[in-house]
Image 1 (cartoon, rainbow, N blue to C red):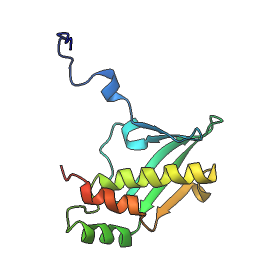
Image 2 (cartoon, rainbow, N blue to C red; image 1 turned 90 degrees about the horizontal axis):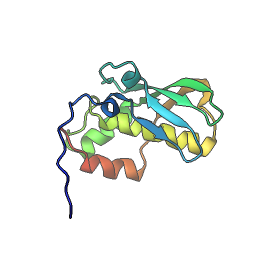
Image 3 (tube, rainbow, N blue to C red; image 1 turned 180 degrees about the horizontal axis):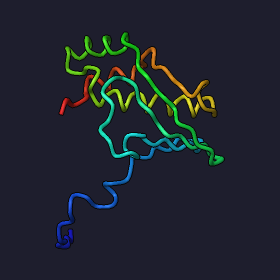
Image 4 (cartoon, rainbow, N blue to C red; image 1 turned 60 degrees about the horizontal axis):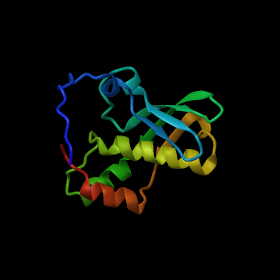
Length: 131
């Protein structure tokens, strides 16, 4: 194996400053609004995403999680994952991506509410790191 010596790059490289962009299989692009605005992520179970359709039109979509699903995960993880956990960002983004892929359209009223969890959410929560 050949290794090249490289000079260390500063922590604030251009790639690290770009918002995370998630692409759905049918061409929707999802960006985290707080990353675009360079502010701290929400910790209240309400997340705003900028979504661009395959045709190029964009909308801001709000995704929330119900207190019931937060309690369910808190119980399953013995209190490791609470409302302020980054797990909920991932979960909300994932549910939005699934909606866009299945419906091929924006959610009604540009809002989506995560009311129940699927098995993948529950398995991921059990493995989610708290740091």
